[in-house]
Length: 71
Image (tube, rainbow, N blue to C red; front, side, top):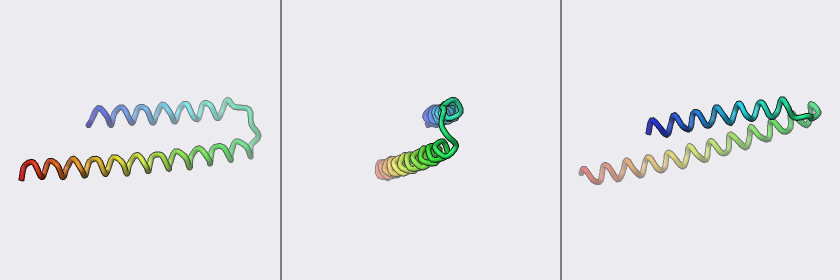
């Protein structure tokens, strides 16, 4: 579990750094850049929410299985 968390934290940081670098190096007008940033942010929030919900469900199921096994 700890290794998975560390990996996900590293992947998230890498994605964030890569995204910022790409945005800074991409030639675009201010309004186009702002629109792109907002769109990417909303997509990232949606994906994070989905991943969090899936992980919560998975952990709840594992917990129920462990409780069932010990009871």
